[in-house]
Image (cartoon, rainbow, N blue to C red):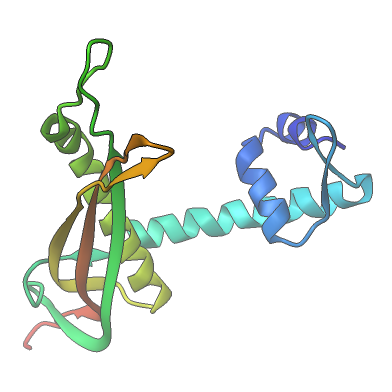
Length: 185
């Protein structure tokens, strides 16, 4: 069965189910333009993918409740366990543009500011994933580090190659397990 037919038949996202199929160890073959799985694997793939989606939904619910602070504690909570330093990263490339009669320049500052909120959110999401993987429900002492990699100009066959600027962000913190203070503590 073609994977796009399987996705359409069961209302799955095609790319997501193809990734699941590969990661779950099912055989996936490529025809000229489509990907194919064995008909005998369709039932186990559908059942496994449903379980995967349920687990992902539970994980997302838990991760949405992970608390994050730049401080070193939460009012009304006490730290039960320190699990260590964690980080989350993301980066974006911004074309540097070219000068010339038919070239269009890129406003690097404007392009970066458009992207910075997204890369910071992605870095925080990775931070939450790292905390979740350690069995923690909070991250303390969170800070951000930003890096800029200036593009190198390389000569390729006598010409100039304009590489993009790369801007990165790392969110750092300490993963902890917290619990609500009981009255009288």
